Length: 164
Image 1 (cartoon, rainbow, N blue to C red):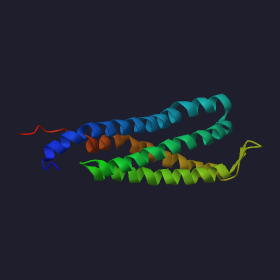
Image 2 (cartoon, helix red, strand yellow; image 1 turned 90 degrees about the vertical axis):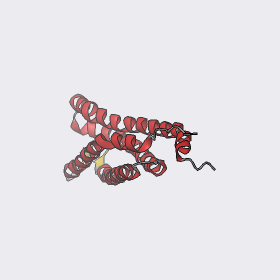
Image 3 (cartoon, rainbow, N blue to C red; image 1 turned 30 degrees about the vertical axis):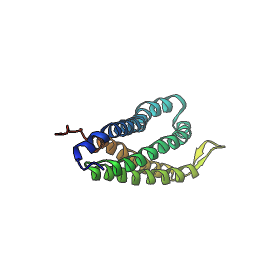
Image 4 (cartoon, one colour; image 1 turned 90 degrees about the horizontal axis):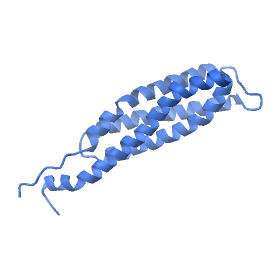
């Protein structure tokens, strides 16, 4: 066993860099997908097919966004347990995103149960709950803005040269 911490850091650097890169890519797919969907797809869909029909499309797509979000949150949590520096920041981000994601999934189930696929209509009270869902999504998106900072701070430890 090598007791030289500089050598240990040097050996772990490629793995740390690879994990950091994979986590940034996963975050980019999730956050970029959420951004593209909210900023471009939903407005164009609403303009093209109408608000209610767009909602039925949204219901299906948000399942995928939530699944990718869950993979990202789990990867952030696992990565924070493996990193050497600033682990708490990334773990806090993963925890907050996880809480928001659980709330979003619960609201999505409630909203789905209020959708009538046969008549393409929604139940009374749907739009109030949908507003809460949109606010939770906004909080998730805003938190996602700072996540790369924590990924970068927690993932890469530059190998030091040995003084041998």
